[in-house]
Amino acid sequence: MEEGLEAVVELINNVDQMLHMYAKNKTLLFDVMRNFLATPHTSPYRDHCFTTLLQNYVSYILYFNFDEIHALVDDFRDTPEWCGIVINKIFTDAIFTHKIMRTSAIEITDYPDVMEFFNEESRKFYL
Image 1 (cartoon, rainbow, N blue to C red):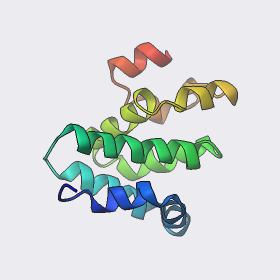
Image 2: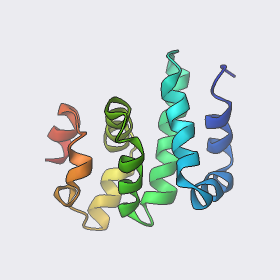
Image 3: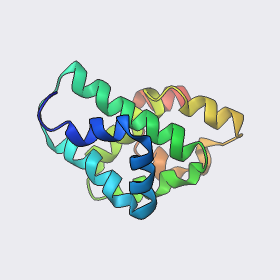
Image 4: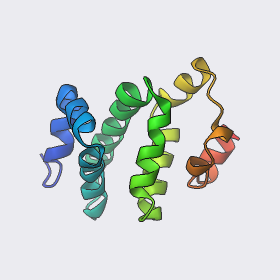
């Protein structure tokens, strides 16, 4: 276990806790993400854990209500660099995002607040 990953790994391994945290106060989950991004250490394992946490967010929250993406963008708006990192990982690394959007007939153009944080890779894939 790498230092600083405890909260991320706990939420990956306990989805019920993640959902409870999100239902109680969305910012608590976003704070876990923010704390991860504030730690400058990078490794393939850290990246994998963060991607998995975001995959769970997509699978267990956005799948049921894609409009919850607005809460994430609103919470991260004051840190646009981090918002871009999270949004682009969700839209390029989280494997179910595209399927959810296609299955639910969600048009990304209906989410300009999300699109403003797209990098070139996300723009190529979704626009």
